[in-house]
Length: 355
Image (cartoon, rainbow, N blue to C red):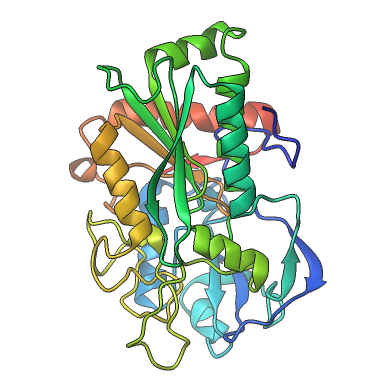
């Protein structure tokens, strides 16, 4: 099956979000998206990893939500989502230049471009791929969301559904609801592996020698809300009943995993925050489903696609970047990530940073 909607061109690219301009429901909490740049010696062409992390830590210390969404991290540019009462002078007084400050309403209240996939379309496409390629695919359920939607995955191998001593790899997208381009990347990957099986020798070997498992959409409730009401919705749709003053809905699924769950590393304990990590680690049904999938397959590597940033994150990205904070396989991962960045640049001419 070939995707007939907007095609994600680069397998390993974290694409930006395109929004169209028709009015929808206005959000309860209007925000604005602001791009800021670290004020440094402009003769320095790029910031190194330690400088990037220092700038992120400074923004957190100043009380701003930093969700690792640096638009151009190598150039020290970060994108923040601010509430109306947050003062830009604080940023300027602490060494950040404000590059872009849209109107207070930001881009909220606009309509998502209909060429992006909603949850029902993803489910329909997975079913069709399984019908088209029954010998190398199996679609299965890994869990349900807070609102009862089914989280589905697809295994691609020459013995799908059969336990084998083969390395397993995982690709997933849309932990964050508004990053609507990312499901296209994973669907493109699925179609490349299935449509080219028996045609392209390299892709055929990948299917024969590995178990590839893809979850094109993790946060289905949030994505549906993006299409129905708020195109900048980020979190899931959990109801936080003990959260007064801000509606109390949603947890950032990507900050709910148990590893280093807690204060720091770009998460918040406030349920009003865009980067609220949840009441406890692995409290969210979406994350429980992803953890169960990992326990089942014991993946040797997993790639999670996000949008709004031109960077590729290292595993253990919460560390300070020093050798002591790096994973044992850092050399191999470093080579792989930089190869991904080079591949993106070779196709699209866009510079991505591994950090």
